Amino acid sequence: MFRSATPRPVTEKEWVWTVLGLALLFGAAVRIFPGLLTGFPINDGGMFAVAMRDLTANGFALPKTTSYNLLDIPFAYPPFGFYAGAFLQRLGMSELQVLLWFPIFLSAIMLPLYYLFAREFLGDRPRAAVAAVFFALTPGEYVWFMMGGGLTRSFGAIFFMGAAAFIYRSFKHGKPRDVIFASAASTLTVLSHPQYAFLAVLSGAILWMFYGRSKQGIASAALIAVGTALLTAPWWGAIAAHHGLDIFLSTGQAGVLQGSARRLVGNIFSVQTFIPFAMLFRVLGIGWTVRYKRFDLIVWGAIPFFLDQRSAPIVAGFTYPLLAAYGFMDALPAVIKWLRHRKQAVEESKSGGFVYNHSLSIGLLGIIFYLALECAGHGYAISRAVLSTPAREMAAWVKESTPMDSRYLILTGRIGLMNDPIQEWFPALAERHSATTIQGLEWTLGKRFMERWDELTALQTCLDMECVKTQENQIGAEADYVIFDKASTAPEILGAFSQNANPLFENERYLVYKR
Image (cartoon, rainbow, N blue to C red):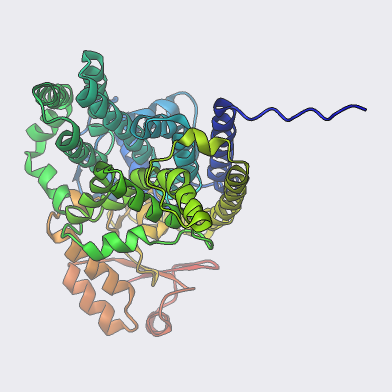
């Protein structure tokens, strides 16, 4: 009789490559899927389309202002993504192809880079592979990278990860090459995205507080700061020469800046999936990191909620998967052990031990497949957040049929100003001024930005013409034409216009009236 051979145990390397491979495969698939369902950039990107046009028209030299929305907005946005997009257009890609597919490509490239980032901060490959799973397959966490505006956000995120990892290495090891790479990555972060630039500075300060309080750490921090300032000087110096340094203060004040412990707690316990695996494991991970004094990860994820509400969810998207990896690889086995034996697991577990736990490994595979299905469903919803064909038809008519200096009021009844594609894309496609578009005003309004946001939101909630006129006066709008979304504008407002005049343009979704 032949005896069946004993199955060879899975090695740590095989386990890591299996988990990481599935994270990369499914993570890339759920990012590509929405792009296949739509032929137009997801949600936003209109202002970036105009920025690429302005850059190309100016011979790839930075223009002083952008023509977006005909407001002479300072061209002070970090330009790295615009140069990359304009270069791809030179290679033959269309403007819309760049803004649809390049952000999706960058968001997929981000996945293996995040694994390297996680391996640096978690110290081993198995935990890093699990962190990559939760980074790749948590619905809602990656959407902003895939949108048209992901042209700059994705570059900012990629370089931010590199900056944080090399800053961490420079404080721990003090090698000159780490300082050089940290300076280079920090420079590219500053040149890619304003919020990631702020987060790179904040992250560097937090990491210095935990790992850099030594002569070597102080020297490394100084060299990185000086090197980044010098390497970015040609850009910020040119902006300051044209517009003054106050331009950077303006965008820094545009947002919700006050701290909020409630938002921090709400974010920690946010549920992204029907079965909240990510939330459960990050909560377990927080307990585990407190037990073993990895306070740097907790502080890193929490501090932004008390400094800049806009940036807080961004940095949480990078730190929470690290906490979830501790929760799954360390805290969960300890809880199971305690439930089985009623003994407290007092020693820190080794991830290598988890690799050989067949039941938990199978459970992890089940979680990966479940999260992939949730992300696929979410991807379908994402694909619908695009500028509709009727909206594009309407914008094309406006461009061809109305004076170039005409001004528009766009009433859609939707209060999510940043999630209403027509508000951003109309100035880019129709090349006319929209009084209801918020994009770009962060560079001109400063502290008034959030007030304007509230005013425009109130305008979209109006139910009668008296309210519309009041809000128009409040924002100082002087519109020659009004555009209505028939599906969501209040019937009383539509009725008031239809009684006095016939629309100049009408399709199945939009009406255009002359004032």
